[in-house]
Image 1 (cartoon, rainbow, N blue to C red):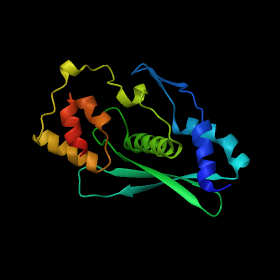
Image 2 (image 1 turned 180 degrees about the horizontal axis):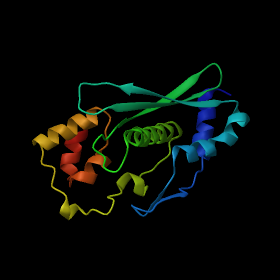
Image 3 (image 1 turned 120 degrees about the horizontal axis):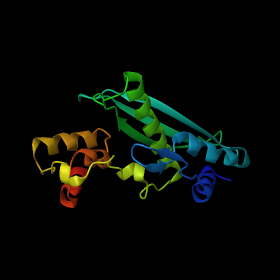
Image 4 (image 1 turned 120 degrees about the vertical axis):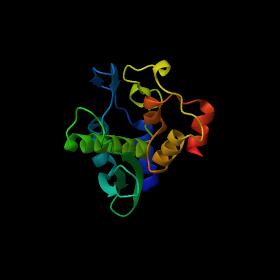
Length: 179
């Protein structure tokens, strides 16, 4: 069986519950470890391996970016998917290793999600506001300094979901951010 078919088998049969709970945000989520555990039964059955690699991207911006790559291989062919995550150096309450570890975990989770087509659109983790409401957040205005910084952040691998934690983003502004 060719690698594309093996990957499609995993993508269509993959099941992993959101069994971890974030008591601060009050939502359930799945971690990279949960995803890897759910793929283990397929590895021997289909004769494939899954490996995650990471590398530091050092663009000329003010925060580091980690690129995570999830790769499936059958020994002769490989298929990969990547995710890029910015490291929030201003995150309060975390030591520097925790800041990088947190970004690394997110990157691995989303690289695996991209490889195995895990749809997290209904995942509170992707849209969680951590107790804030849009009424308390400033509105992101198109072409403002904040908008331009947000656009650069997305170009560097950041997510709109992360921007929405800080700003109230209209659909029109979100479209401009992702163009």
